Image 1 (spheres, one colour):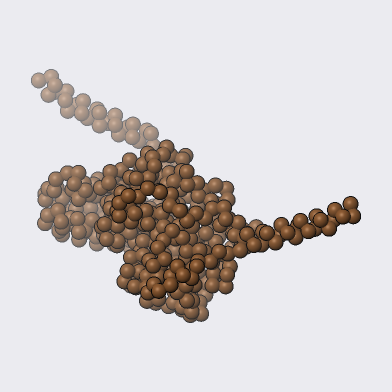
Image 2: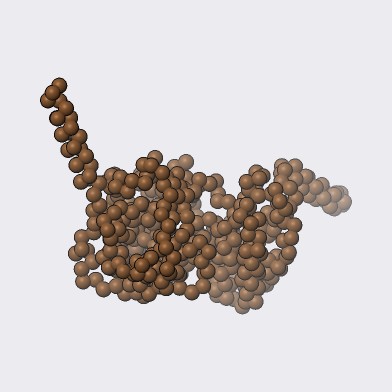
Length: 156
Length: 299
């Protein structure tokens, strides 16, 4: 009884604690946080599909479809406001977005559109079996690289 | 005293003469390609593995259709800025008028048709280990590509790096035509070695260099400073990379890491090409990387 009563409260406390810590450790402006979290959502959903392709997990049609649908939706979301002036890698620590992105915003948006196309293509076949997912993985992965090639600072 | 001056002068002249001889270009023996007829279809595979288009297409080139090797991409290094030349089949501005031998000699020995040294920004320090017959296939493929009449631009290098003759000494010091991995007992390992050490010239970026730009083969593929000055190029030798075989193969075709981050920078263009190779070539690269001696990160 007591556990049940306090359980939700404790869970809530731990979530608050975790988020405060997360925000406390980072001095990044909210748009930088937002775009980096957007990227993490891509990575998580790519991982669901990629782990099936790599044989790390079994193919699961429902999971694959959900992940691909989310990728397609994420890629369609507007990124207006994600890249305000003063938030490039050369201006703030913790950003890896190269200044070139601001100069070539049109091309960035075009490449994001290509990612959306690849994700939509994956979503249309992700429920059809492992081979179908395998067949689209290369185009999907390479659409990530097309942008990182130009606009993301290399690792250090 | 009277006799010292002429002797000193003679020594200087002799030293200059020796330097001139030592720094002379060492061309490929013509017999190396005698009787080899290039196969353009096989040459496309060499072209993809060697990544020619990654540097020699124009900076604003479109991805669709056969690559136009018009040149013009700029590579800023600590020695100065190199500008990739036009190597399309245009007879005036490209290499259309060159003989097959001229092209193979340029790629494998870093020597121009008029007998001058090329800078090792052209990775002949790796291509020199390739099979000349494969290079003839590459030549046949290059001749099928569209011509471009874009003139090549000169490199922008300061003294002393602008003295091409001095590259003769660099070649004497650092050009090696033996394999780093001496022991490759299986055909798969031999193919992997040909891909990694020669054609795909992985060591050119993933192996550290000394102050004169010579590769430190004792730290083979252990990671290096990025020649563009930003960030580091990761190690890919065992001990510096702990990915599974499946992760490496997937990365080389999709660009996705085990954490589902993606490749960036120069590696994206490399993956675009490697992903078009047959799967057995990717497997051969993985086998080779497993066979490289283990190292701690060169730091």
